[in-house]
Image 1 (spheres, one colour):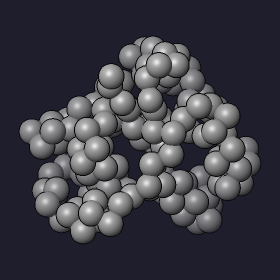
Image 2 (cartoon, rainbow, N blue to C red; image 1 turned 90 degrees about the horizontal axis):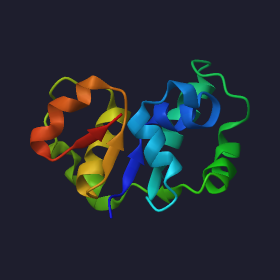
Image 3 (cartoon, one colour; image 1 turned 30 degrees about the horizontal axis):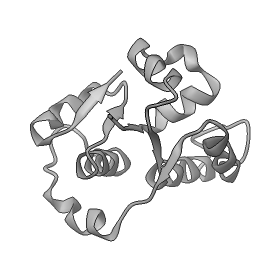
Length: 132
C-alpha cells in the first residue's frame, strides 16, 4: 500500500481551501485506506511563518495537532538519521530548507509527496515521487 506525505501548502489547503488541491491529491485524501502523513517539519514551518507574521491561520499553530488527528492524518517526526544524512540530498532547484527536509523525509521513508511545487520534480532521480 502506498503512503503519502503532505507538503505544507497541501496540508493547509486540505483544511481550509480543498478546492486548490489537484484531483489526484483529492482522490488520495478521500481514500481512507491510504496512510497520509504530516511531518513535524511542516508544523515547524507553519509555526515559524506564523510567528513572523508571514502566515495567517484561523487558529494557533498548536491547534493544528488536533486537526491532524481529526482528519485522520498520521504524524511523522524527523529522525536523528534523517537529520544526520540530510547533507546527502543535492541542492538542485530548491533552496528552501523546509521543502528540502520534506523531500529528504519522503525519500528516506518511501513516501509519495503530495505537492503542487514543480521544482520537486528535479529530485525524482533521487527517488522522490510527487503527485498533485
